[in-house]
Length: 157
Picture (cartoon, rainbow, N blue to C red):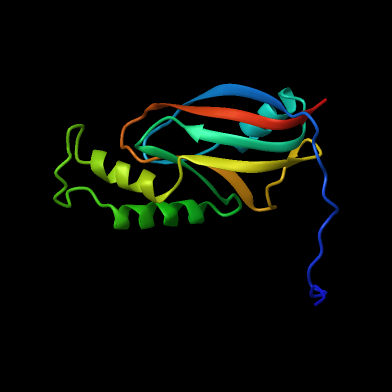
């Protein structure tokens, strides 16, 4: 059986001895919303001398998260905030309210999104699509200092 003509791919590339480069990114949020991390992640990739491999992001919190989403129309992010609020509203009778009415909804929103992301790096560049950006999502109402572990694994040079 032959592959459909609508598919194509580049030849595989291999890395003999990968490097691991790590950094900790501190992000001050302003409260509920999205913070675009794309430029900072691209700078990390460049500073690491990354050529081929993958960059992993891991947020060290349970009430904030990470996502890759559209970067062209800001109304997408507004609609995503609305959807997350509808899925986990405040004052819905949650039993865990130790840090306020937005605490348990923030944990649920973080569970529904992601605490880690992996983005391929090809020829020293993040392999994001044209309309994609990397965002930290703050689920709490008040500002927080968030930490994101960055790690590139692959070839450098």
